[in-house]
Length: 270
Image 1: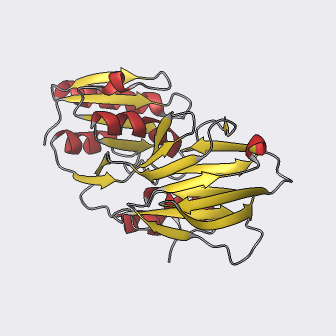
Image 2 (image 1 turned 45 degrees about the horizontal axis):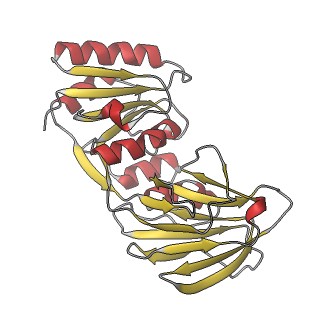
Image 3 (image 1 turned 30 degrees about the horizontal axis):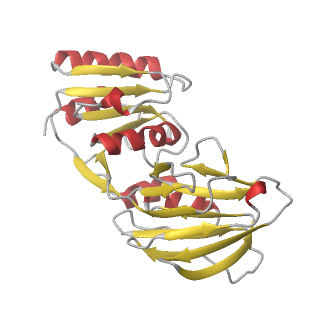
């Protein structure tokens, strides 16, 4: 569909964003599209409510910060990459005008991505597009983590931490910790221990309908982070319950760009 109301989320700390914003303003104005500018942080659901799509100018970190409100409001996201990697912000910063015109005309492909619903013992919850990480705060201390799946025991890990990742997040911390790459269309949850003491403790791929529960006796020494946001104290938030969320996030992608095109480019495959 063509777009008539576009939210524009800008990370002002990135270089070259002013020129990009100026170009987007010109293109949307000439197309008669209403532009909702946002450069404060973090954004709320109300900020993008009623928009047909949301453009994020920044890197993947900026993109992740918009994923939860966008998913809850049903607003598709696309990103113009001004960061380092750009796995999520798929549109390059070259030929901005051409890219925006194409998107405004509805010439794009929608991809639905799974999210994790993370529930804490204190009854608060978050959504994650990439992952939730539970980790020891003391770099010289190993933690003890007990994982259950649908109430049954999986394993007790002695490790620096655990990563629970979506297929989309498999290219993030999960990959750096030796976890597998997962097709983003798959309905799974990847659990990867960080520097596990037992070498046979490898990643485990769970069916997307599985509800995972993480306990620890070292809770006073642990921190947790959702999609790379500032680390929270784990005290009072465990046990951690993680499952695939009922809501998904829609991504606007170029029609001629596949997930594996991005992998070959970003991971420097031959």
